[in-house]
Length: 377
Figure 1 (tube, rainbow, N blue to C red):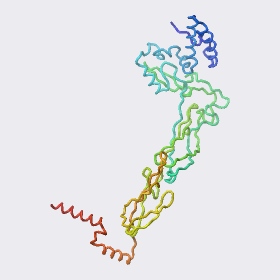
Figure 2: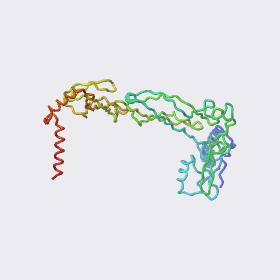
Figure 3: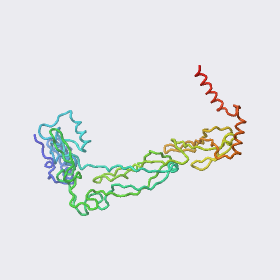
């Protein structure tokens, strides 16, 4: 038996407003509620009809589907037309097509799609000092922003904005190809679901304009190359008043003249003289907080590492700083005069054959001799 028209059940015309639907439902539901009509099967059935009608017409998406397809919109296989549609077991198709097209089978589709704005990326170069200590940076980006003239509506001031009659405000049209249903953007409203009498001249009806925007970015202490900072809602404006996307600021730390960074540790090379390496002494080494004195013990060899604890980097996730590791490099004297060269020759002669003064030298050449002796066996 054919179902009654939902508008007829509520005593309304098809063009009734949301307020009219609510008022009609409240009035009829109160009149036919089972508590007021105990024992009346007729009132009970009438109340069920009223409730069912309101559940459809009171929901804008369901109402749009009902207006386009009638009761078939909510029946299994509805929206395909004759042939009975699909039976059980194909329910997953609706979920798949919902993700692909923004709507489901069996109705007039969803309301105009909410298309969130695009996310944007900005590459920000900072110094090592700024990365370690944190800093605020002013940046300027080019983005799609809401039109100031029409405030995103796409219409001139005072111009009518009506629901597109071709797609019912959904922005999408469905087309049946065999037993498959496809969706396309409505060619009359270009997917907006709206029909604008006079489009805004500033944005040509898009509701968005290209605009430069200045932002202040707070860089936390301890960031490193590749870290990203998300500025929520600072991306491109969305379509049809949808939320804006996000802005991702990607950090790039410039190469430093003195320090190299590895995680939370800093490394630097410190040149020392041959004399200091042999006799010991004290030198000043740089840190990001200023200079520190470093004691060099006598007989220090080139490549020796000295660790200054807590003079590295603390990350945003930890308050504990890494270390500064200083690698000493013994600098060979250059541009010597004859007197200096003669002094070095005399020093070399005085060390000749005395392994206690040159342990690595003697050990290396003894190892070389053993290697070749073993080859000859």
